Amino acid sequence: MPKLKTHSGASKRFKKTAKGKVKRGHSHLRHILTSKDKKRKRKLGTAVLVDPADQPKIKRMIPY
Image 1 (cartoon, rainbow, N blue to C red):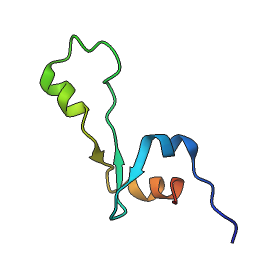
Image 2: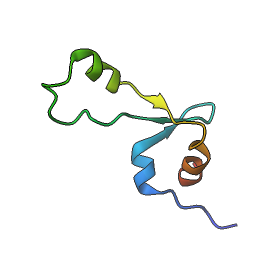
Image 3: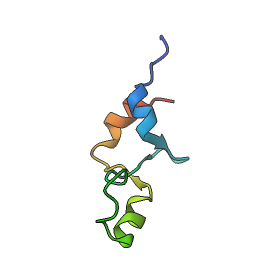
């Protein structure tokens, strides 16, 4: 079997956890931050798990 190539765009956006789940960041935290309240910005800064329905597709893109 040949080695699998990692999708470079996906590798920048997603990380695997120790148990094999996939982590992602939030959007909307780059600019126009003055109109967003502190609570919203704080929540957007934390990483969350990818939805279980999307995990198989992402795992194929980041095999290692």
